[in-house]
Each structure stands twice: as C-alpha cells, then as structure tokens.
Image (tube, rainbow, N blue to C red; front, side, top):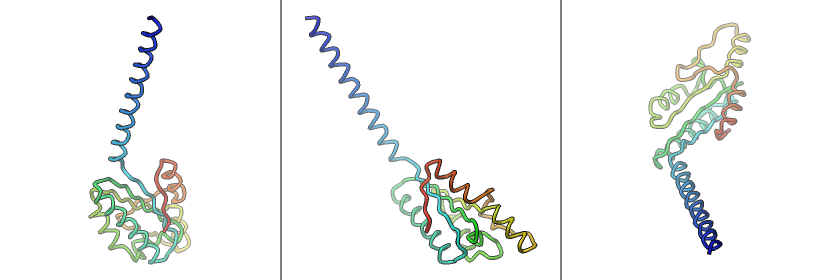
Length: 158
C-alpha cells in the first residue's frame, strides 16, 4: 500500500511539473508575440541606389510589423564612403531621412554616423563636416554594428 501511495505521489509530482512546464511554454509564446524586432542596416557605399535601398528596406520592415501590431527598432549605420548618406552637404537622401524620422512611430528608427570616417574626411577635405540632424555620431560604425549584433540584433546589408 505504501508503494502505491508513493507511486501515485510521484505521478502527481510529474504531472505538476509537466503542467508547470506547459504554462511556462505558453507564457514564452505569448511573450514572443509581443517581442520587439531589431535590425541593424549597414551602408558603406556612396551610391544613392544603395542608400535608397537601405531606406526602402527600413520602410518595408516598419510597415510589415506595423501591420502585425508588433514593434520594430531599426538602426541604419553608415561608415566609410557610406557616410555621405548622413552628410548635410552631400546626402542624396536628406529628405527621406527627415520623413522617416518624423513618421516612424510606433517603430523606432535611428541613424548612426561613424565618427572615425567623419574625422578622416574632415582631415582630407580641410574643413568641418556637418551631419544631418536626424543622425547621431558613434565612435566607429563597424564597432557599432558588432555591438548591435552581440546584443541580438539582426544584420542586414543591402
């Protein structure tokens, strides 16, 4: 009789663990439904077609997740020749950057400009370079992309 009670108690304990595990799994599924998607987009070419493709990718990603009622964070990182995308004097996409910044909500879009590249351009050109107001400087574009990927961000290079 004692063995029967211990076996029944063991079975109940296993059922309890299974029930708890299935509840945790369901909670995890519910959490993933409300997760924030994050993508880092690299621009390293001074080509208006590449810059526009990167912005098209960002806009399409925002629209897709907006339609699903999910949040997305996008960071466009420009370095090397791609920094021209964020230069106030040379950007062929200045108007699009402003529009995307203004109309991104509820998504978040950030534009990061490589300071290493900016300083190199300033040295070569012999004058300060202004960055569009929608962009912020990061010490290194390549390092910024590494850090974002290490934090679990998806990487995209158009």
